[in-house]
Length: 106
Image (tube, rainbow, N blue to C red; front, side):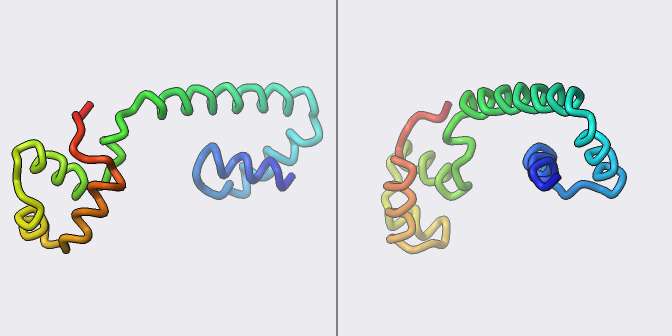
């Protein structure tokens, strides 16, 4: 039962309600329905992983990294970037190295 609750949390991102827990307890007793549900959950997880791989890595970047990338493409100096974004020079350098900037936005 604990594995079912953990799987539910992974799929839905929240804890199950009491009604959902009762449904899972009924599924626990019916092994055929449980196997069918596991197959559907695994198939859904594969589709999510493939969709995640297709998304641009720059879309997941923090807003400051996106702004630094745009400014570097326009040849803005590092001290100016730090001033405009109100972060330290070291913070700008760290974002540049962490996100390998500048690069093309996809």
